[in-house]
Length: 231
Image 1 (cartoon, one colour):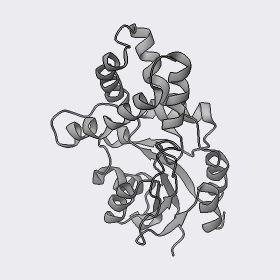
Image 2 (cartoon, one colour):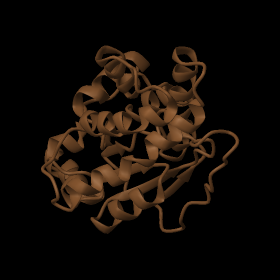
Image 3 (cartoon, one colour):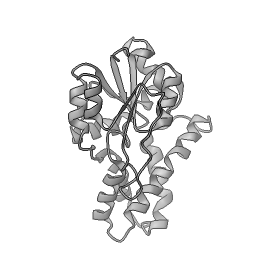
Image 4 (spheres, helix red, strand yellow):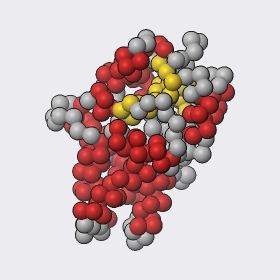
């Protein structure tokens, strides 16, 4: 295996615990709300909202905008239609405040000893930067769908990482807890590392983490990935 020079990370679910973070914050702000159901419903709107952009049905818009549109559509169903504009904006920015998985900061710090580490997320630059600053994520740079005006799995995102750093696609490894993300990255010549996040949707909904034998590497978490890469 050729040691990758660039590690490009999916973020939501792979590096940070979006479900647990949203549940904790919503439960504190609005204890009368089913925080688990709201978190799942909000996330369920994610792919359909991006598909409208991917299909050409609308121009590229930042994920912050899509998250807010999904949220506004959900609030009446959860008894929160009365929220003011400042309250809605604060809640929408919960995505900027997601907590990292326990291994994430130390794992990325180890991996960056030998590789350049960047997010390759559908999250926008402002979101990812705020998240990294709060959580202490030690990225070397922040890449995002916003840089390429395209949402994964568009080829412009995966190939764009290689172009930004002036390397071949084979020198880039996509790191993700989502097999479809890795399959798309591999189709464009990237190496792939699957990371197990069985509790991504909550401990009560364990996720299949078997991955695919086509992945370059399979790791229990980011510390294990650092071991696998000799970092």
